[in-house]
Length: 449
Ligand code: SAH
Ligand code: SF4
Ligand code: F3S
Image (cartoon, rainbow, N blue to C red):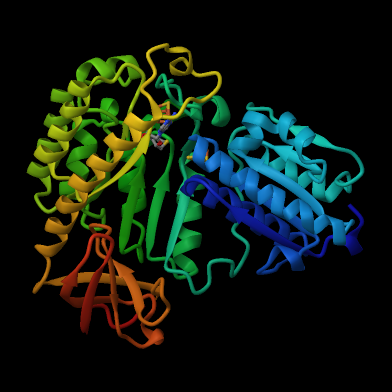
């Protein structure tokens, strides 16, 4: 790509935290090549859209955005437009045909190639489709200063999935499980901490499957977790996502042993009926899931538990659905991401015949969300009148206050000077809502960094 034409770039990120990590990786690569980020696509010579395809909704959102950006190219013919991420992997060829403005489509395992393509000058000359799943995740020396001013950061430690839950597209778009060398993860964590990051989340489709073998030594996820937790200057450590079928006692015990491992776990259960779990190919029963929750609460009583659930999986009867509602009421999750089952082309469940009608799915979802909302509010209300530890991350969503999170991952907004961003403080909770808590600053806990 001729240098004069590609000075500025804009990356739009959709989907999960791993896409955020990938976009940050690419941004740092492009900056290291001398390009500069801009805050609007209209200002950029190079626009990358990092997409998700886990359900129909994010797929439609991505297509709408691609359509909008395609319009830009009418006024700016030299604009290079790339669609990357999981939808590019899943439907790259179709996208290139449907949107002639797209110059290239590249899957999530090809992010290193994108940087190479930029350097080689190949972009914009011909259409490119890059969807190999063979490459391991790349590692990079962090672009100096990229994370300056930020308090939280992600590190992908493994990607891909071998579980093949019958509804899920992820194993097809992220490929088979592959772990990064522990030394790379540790170096990256140190570099983030050096730039001021205090709260790190280790990412993987299934972090429990992390495994690295070298010189007769085997690294498991709990080993890596302990090593990262021990790094000086790291106040908070989190991880996501872990799969209930592989949640070992050793990992559960980490919640009791590691002071800076936050008391929060995201543990998707998907369905409350054994029959549905079996057809989802999840590899655990309702009872096993409930037992895990009990063990976690035993080791760390204040642990917040969040989860993912879907309604209307093919063949889900009213009775099955009632089992899901029952589990939600029994466990009382702190928060729940709930979805209507959505067919993904190429998955096993897409071929199941006993589909639940759309209207029925919508009704089930609405009922489930109403029940969960009351639970979330009840849990949050229990914090009213108490003091909680908050790491201040930045301005609140509405911009008027500062915002941070508790170790249990609850958002707290309160009045405070912006010079306090990055500090750990005590906040008195005045009012609790379903999605955030309103508080009052009490005192800084750590005076200097
Ligand atoms: N690796 C994670 C899940 C990643 S996908 C895990 O194993 O838990 C995030 C969530 O999207 C899933 O937990 C599931 O609830 C939902 N999901 C995935 N495929 C779906 C589909 N076809 N229809 C509806 N929801 C889906
Ligand atoms: Fe998808 Fe299941 Fe793998 Fe999670 S564990 S990414 S839901 S196949
Ligand atoms: Fe979506 Fe890919 Fe993440 S499909 S949820 S962006 S792994």
